[in-house]
Image (cartoon, rainbow, N blue to C red; front, side, top):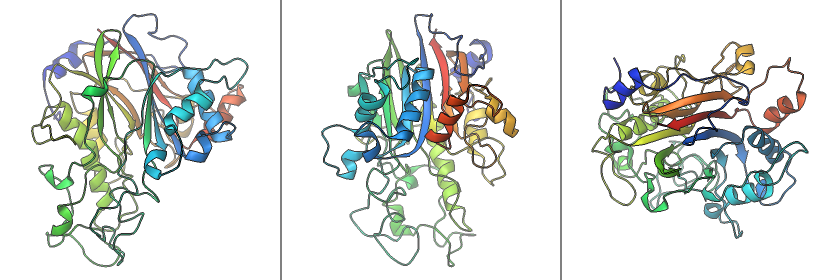
Length: 395
């Protein structure tokens, strides 16, 4: 059964044009006046010293891929938030990446891209609570990275940045970084004393005291309204924790499940939600939106929980009728794969609301047989993830 059946479910059934799967998209909806290209790219552990000055090979490779695809709206996952990190710079890392790499042609046949609108949200990674907790149950309290709100060696580690050619409605941004996991109804938190929850060595769980402090978002969940040629499209950005490294209680698997669930509840308008300013409630039913980022969740995995199937594939509030593919993923046996690990994993997403139309989409992952070797080298140099993009039209 679908997770939710709403007005958007009707639109999904009767609406949008089918997706055209390509390589980097020579046929797109860019000629249509309300079409924008959205892209999610986990450039693995891109740090301050790499982007604040030009010349870093990984950043250059990532920039060449961005300049090939030329997205209008881009989220870069695993980009350190240097302002949280405490590095003495006069610009955020997303601005430095734009200025030093994306706006500068990275090959003779490429053009730079100007992104005048950027945002680098604060992240829970590496941020320790005021009180000391032993969240990871290693016997030591208040130590990074395991006792931070989100896993990180320092504040802002593994954060993300947003770059857009279109204006961001900064006055209407809603962030949910401080939302408590325990405040989600029917959450999957393994709590000490609950039936079936192990408290032996190598087990991770929360105590009753820790429930009052533990945040849902391992980085942040944030709704950034985008002004796309007179239309408002809500960009929904997050990067849930990987469902691994967590012991017999499947702590991170449960955490990932509920992080993925959050935006499904948000677009369904659930009233339990509150943002960092204290405003309650989810998204308006008539709103258009695009969910973007590395969700660390793919459908049909062998893990005990499968949030991607429940909250994306079987959820009428997202249009997943045709998903982007690639030659490289197909070569590995999973055409929808967006990352190398796990013999090709589908974890990165660009998902529109069903009132929007997907005109074209792809995962940028050439096959090993492709004669254009430069791009294949670039995707390997940039990350173990591949960029996912989609041309999406507001009808």
